[in-house]
Length: 430
Picture 1 (cartoon, rainbow, N blue to C red):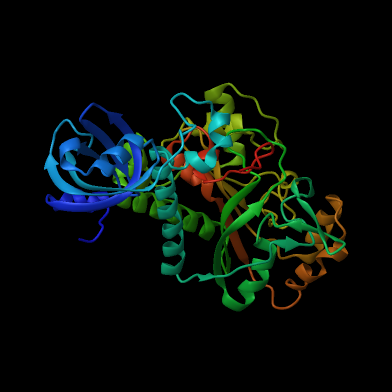
Picture 2 (spheres, one colour; picture 1 turned 30 degrees about the vertical axis):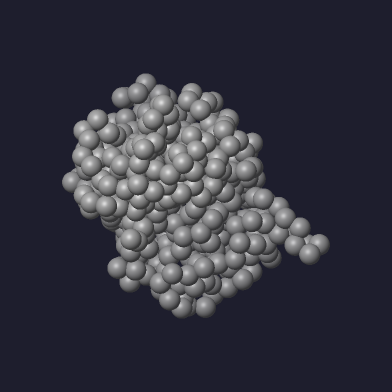
């Protein structure tokens, strides 16, 4: 008899052979209840002393939580069991006996992070990681369906892209280099070849932040396209979010139930057009609706984003931020030269910015001026400026923090639970 997973066993309704890990165990005089988990589900099994060999009974008594086992038996309906069925064990083979598992109920968040290599076995994190896998699949599917090529750029870069204060400096054979903040500058070179490209890869930000929505290493879904303006990118971003949400709703119903996520709140995203407001309108709404007076020219902090999204039940785009607080490559807004043609997409339910994008500046002199203002050496960007000298075209792009999308979809309290092994200002192991 071949091994099958637990979900397949629950459909089999007959003799089954499964393998997995002990999720819970309860021992009585002549009965031992073992709840077994694998990547698909959990199921109760019953070891009866008179039904197994003496060695199997001795092994069953030594089993602790997280021991690995192979089990063969008869599947019987039992409404008292956790999934409505139990396996009456005929054969038990212990593959690996576990020590006393260090994680018990009501452990602190820091303890669980210290033992992350074990805590990822929890049903909650298993469900989140399944949803994460679906999100990555959906991103790839969406871009490829829309004619985008997958393209990659170096992780070691000689210059900044998103501000020098968040650069991780590394020694590169005796020369200073930096971990990539974004693929964007290199992507802008590739669009003159492939025109429409995307990538999902790690990005690194040395942000001295301890908030629940920041990671120093995160996965970045980015896109760049020739002949596209900022409105094209807003539409592409909305389509991407809707595709991701629909795919998760279709493929992860059980996982959403297990983590107690209200799927109805996600469905709203599919049925409405996302609002688009300007930075000026956002400041006006915050003042009138939330009694928050923000000085023009200041970036929206986490608290302001949280208050703003309380006014919406879908993601919302905020456009045309002040030029002085945005990156050097963003295109100046001809209608208001104090602003740039950019957008942030803010997720509802307090999750804030999940996507940032813009139309790219094509005027070499304007780029040079802004680099100088930011204290950068123009010479270090000569190759990038070349892109404006040899057949420059309008182009735009955006970047999405994948963990932020996952945190919102799963309604996680902390972004650290959106990735298997989080890296933050203070968290660098295991």
